[in-house]
Image (cartoon, rainbow, N blue to C red):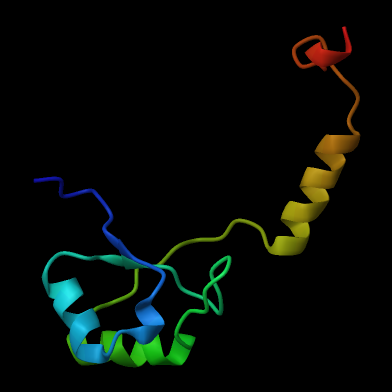
Length: 94
C-alpha cells in the first residue's frame, strides 16, 4: 500500500526473541533503531542485529555520510556564532 514507508521496530526489541523479531520483519517491518541506546531504553548489541539480519537474508541499507560528528558540531557552532543577516535575524529581539 505504501511501498516507500518505513515501519520501524523500536523500544522493547531487547526483550523480543529472534523469532518474534523475524515475524515482525516478515509482516512488513523494514527498519530499526541501530546503536547502543535509545533515549531511555537500551537497544540490542549491534552485532546481535547483524547476526539476525544474516540469518533472515536482510541487507542493511547503505548510507553515505558527508561529514563526521566533529565536522557537524563545528559547522553548527559556527552557524550559532554568525551574526544576524538581512534574511535571518532574531525577531524576538525587536
